[in-house]
Amino acid sequence: MSDLTDAVRARLIGAGATPTTAQVAAALRAEGRMLGDTEVLSLADEVRADLVGAGPLEPLLRDPNVTDVLVNAPGEVWVDAGDGLRLTEVRFADEPSVRRLAQRLAAVAGRRLDDTAPYADARLPGGVRLHAVLPPIASAGTALSLRLPRRRAFTLDELVAAGTIPAAGAVLLGGLVAARIAFLVTGGTGSGKTTILSSLLSLADPGERLILVEDSAELRPAHPHVVGLESRPPNVEGAGGVTLHDLVRQALRMRPDRLVVGEVRGGEVVDLLAALNTGHEGGCATIHANTPADVPARLEALACAAGLTRDAVHSQLAAALDVVIHLVREPPAGRRRVSEICVFERGPDGLVKVIPAVLFNPDGLITEARGMPILQSRLTGHPR
Image (tube, rainbow, N blue to C red; front, side, top):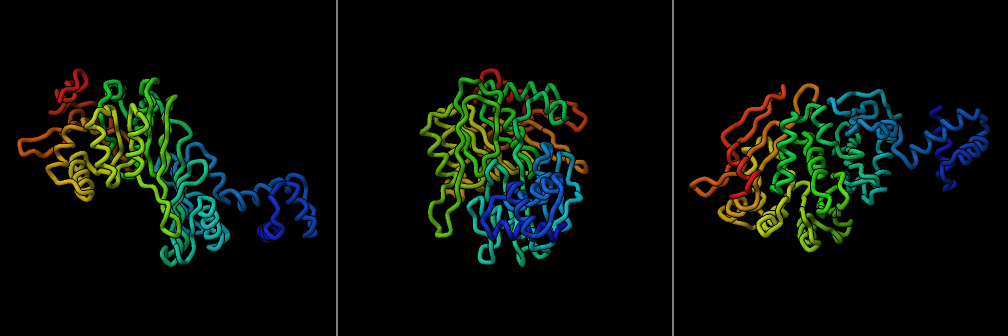
């Protein structure tokens, strides 16, 4: 059947025909082959997936539970459906098939992927995040990574049921949003930062206007007034790029009630801190950090690289941000959960540190820590 699929695909490509059922049937007749209706429909789906879809990966992308699809080799396709990585039975015919799919998906996203540009990072129509690397950069063959956006935001009740946060913790997080406290969601890669931020933004007052600034549009809050801005890399001539730094500045001119940066990675941190210091309460962002204690150093490194002095960074940080919500991903099943809620506190040396306020253990037990009085005061009166 593989040879027949290849022949039909080649004939459709040569004719510039759309891979409809009728066109597939015509191509079969031209090949001197007659198949039953069920076989023709199956072949049409296969050819359509190969020419305009995601080929053998199409069934995986349709699964609502799948968040990541990773192709390491023609015979090695992994998925993450929320319970850790799992090797699937999906197979590609050969390495050129993987390369062809990666190049076609990159082209759909308006990116170049060939020997002169051996890697691509882009967003596909529908929100799927694509990353592809060609050999010899990828030594084992074309490596393809697809991250799927959730179709809708989880509610806090769903996150409680999933064990991401205990019920009392969900009430506390809801209070942070209602009090319009500025916060960061932190954690490692794949720890669920975007998921929890989408859920929290869904709790914002329906009368508020949310401006989302992202490298790739992944936040999907269930809220009636959302405006999304997405960065754009430069084209092959090096022109036309739009950075997060550019978009944060534009967002401030769009009357945001809440300014949200999907992930702070660079100089946009300076504009975010400035905005949160000039009346834009309730703003929030995510940032990569292995522990909450690492957050000030991470922000300092980004802001200093953008031109601020260390003293200026900590002065702005002390006045701009209130809370850190930290997530972890536990081995081996990969359960994502909120591990602690912390507060920012400026010490006598002028440097800002992160102080634990509430700790959540894996069994859902809650422990109050030294920063809890500070957190309670900010929830009630929001003083600094």
